Length: 400
Length: 80
Image 1 (cartoon, one colour):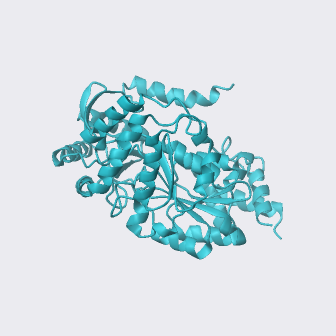
Image 2: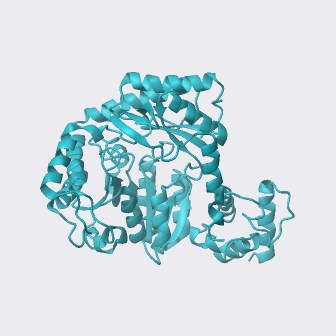
Image 3: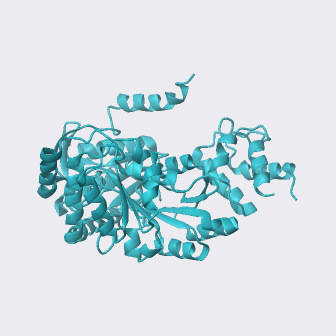
C-alpha cells in the first residue's frame, strides 16, 4: 500500500504523543525577544534558533520591514521572471554581490531553494558532482535532480576528495566540488584551505554553502572561505538570509559572469513567488549591520566559547571546536527525548535531532548560540545540562 | 580481469561483520530487507568497497541495487 512506508513515522509520532512530548514543530506561542519565548506554554531561553547575530528583533530591521510593507505591499504575488522583481530585490542582489566582492548575484525565496536550485542546475548530464558526505538535505535533493554523476567524498576529508578527483582523470575539470562552511548539525568547520588546494591541483569548480557561517566567520562576515583566505578559489557561494540575517531567503554569488544566464535556468528560482518586500528590506538592513558592526560577531564568539567550554567542563561529548552550533551527542533515542523534555522543563529550548537528520547514528541535542544571548542565559543553559548529567540522563561517553 | 563470482564472494565476506541476522549471504540477499542495513550502514559499506577496489561508486546507481548480486554486478561494471 502507498501509505505503508509512513507507518514507522506514524508509530514514532504516536510514541511521542504517549510520552506527552512534542519536540518536532513545537509551537512558539509568543516571542519575547531574539533569545526568549513562550514555547508549549513555558517561558524558555531559545537555544535552537540559528539566530546567530540576534537581528530578528533589531529595531532597524523591523522598521525597514514595516516601511517596505507600507511602500510595496505585503507580497509580490509573482515569480522573479514575471512580476516579482521589485527594485528592492534588485538592490539586495547588488548589495550581496558587493558584500562578497563579486559582480554577480541571485536572490532566492529561501535558502533551501537557493542551494537545491544551484546544485540541480550547475552540473548536468556528462558532468560530475563530488559532494561532502555530510551535506545538507537541500544539496542532496539538488544533486539528485541534476542528471550529473554524483559521488560522495568522506566528510571534511581533503585526501579522500583528492583520491576521487584522481580517479576521474580528465573528467576532474568538469566536476563541481561541494562543501559547506560550518556543518549545520555538529557545527564543525570545513577544512577549506586544504579543499581549495586539492581543487587547484586537479581542477573543477568549487561551491561553498555558507548558510551557517555567513555573518559568523571571516573579517567582514563573509564566512568560512574568507576566514580560511581561499575566497579566490571558490566559484560559487550560496547562503541564506534566515540565520545570521534574521529573515528568510537565499542567495548565490559568483565571480563568473555566466551566473546571469544560469539565473534563467533554475526551476526553484523561476517557478516560485519572490520574497515579500518586507523580508527583502529587513535583509538589506541586516546585511548592512553585519558589515558595519563586527562587534556582533565578536559577541557571538564570546558566547560560543562560553557555552562550549561550559558544556565541555561537565564532560559532555561535543563537536571538535567551539562553534555557533554546539551539539551534544547521544546514543539512546528514548533517553535523548527525556533530556529534551527535561531541558524544556528547565526553561531551555534546544533542537532534538534524530538520524538521518544527524550525520551518524547519534541522536543530538543541538544548541545554537546567538550574539543576543546574555552571559546569564548561557550559564542557565549550562546549568540545565549539568542537572541532566547529575541525574544520569547524559553519560558523556558518546563521541561525534 | 576479476569475474562476477569473485566480486560476489568479496562482498559476501566483507558483509559478514554487518550480518546481524546471521543469514547465509548470497547474491539474492537483500541489503536492506533481509540484512536490515540502515542507509548509513549501506553508505559505510560502499566506502569500504570503494577503498578496496580504488573506485568511486556514484550515488546514481543505488536505486538499482537491492541485493548483494546487484551490487556485485555494478562494482564489476565500474571496475572494468
